[in-house]
Length: 288
Ligand SMILES: Cc1ncc(COP(=O)(O)O)c(C=O)c1O
Image (tube, rainbow, N blue to C red):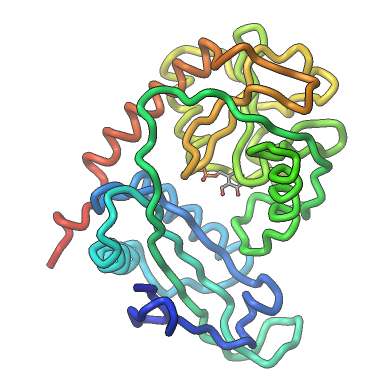
């Protein structure tokens, strides 16, 4: 089932008018939340980010967290999967095509569950990545459905046999096309500051909390592309990829295997995720 504007319908009947502004302009915001057995990880952090994204683009969100949870509960029960992700999208709504905001418009709301593999408890072997110019706008902090540069970057990566494209702006590494980027150099953990040039990833946030707890030295600074060869470990983070080591970047940088810091953070993150999924708002416990 798919949730569309207050109704649960089969996917083939889940229709949005062509004049929906998300279809015409990419005028909408979204979230992806990891779930297991009807419990959703870092729910409140995702809800806060959705509220922030929508406020930044002035799309009113009519549902509160409890309403989203009851939508999630119904979708989850219907999907009957153990592990998956919940997708939520709110667009500005349906209106005659004019760029400026319509006078009167009701936001459109869509949600669905997509099954996903159970995360591996052990750290995965690293994946390949490529470097690409960051062609996105200057409000990458907003989780907008306008993802064309990200789509083009991921397609380039796929065509070159890589899992992720690492984006480069003004000779600095910003983030992946759909992940945040971390670099370890001489024991210090670097990641781009959470400003307008990157998405404030929920996984990034939790990994940084774990890094602080482990007493790692953290540098919230952009890492220079010119210093790539000096990186000891590189990994990316995201809601569905969790913490993924990078093994090789375009033949310019390679790692013999997942590094020590990456492995520690992976284990810490997985423990945190498991704990989170034990106590998170639950389908079962919130029924009624
Ligand atoms: C551009 C970008 N950066 C980072 C992330 C990771 O964010 P999160 O950890 O909240 O999934 C995503 C997730 O989709 C993304 O699209």
